Image (cartoon, rainbow, N blue to C red; front, side):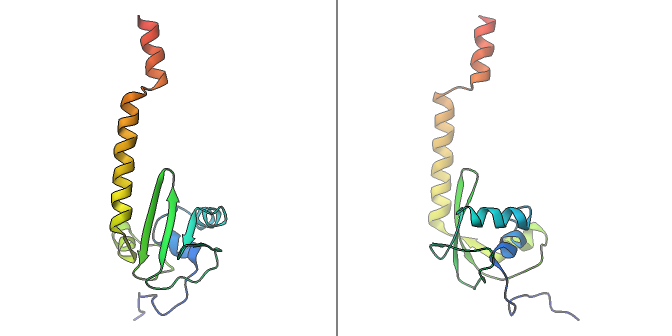
Length: 124
């Protein structure tokens, strides 16, 4: 029977990010790495960088920035519950994302949506 673990194989950074479900396609992962949105152990890297266990990856997805630690390797894309076992987000990263989400909500309260504002101008 074939072993499902890829821990003994070398896995490229773009393929690992795709397998961990951070990006929908490998091409998108490659584009983000080339664009400087992904840092491997504090440095910009190439899509062909070999991922190691315990490595720190900082990546940006839209407005969110995450810092994760690699716990397992996989070159195969699987379901979300299995993909989440490949990494662990740092406590500081989770706290920072929560703080930014609250700030975004507060900003939305002070700056109402322009479409809604135009609607109210038409009504009154």
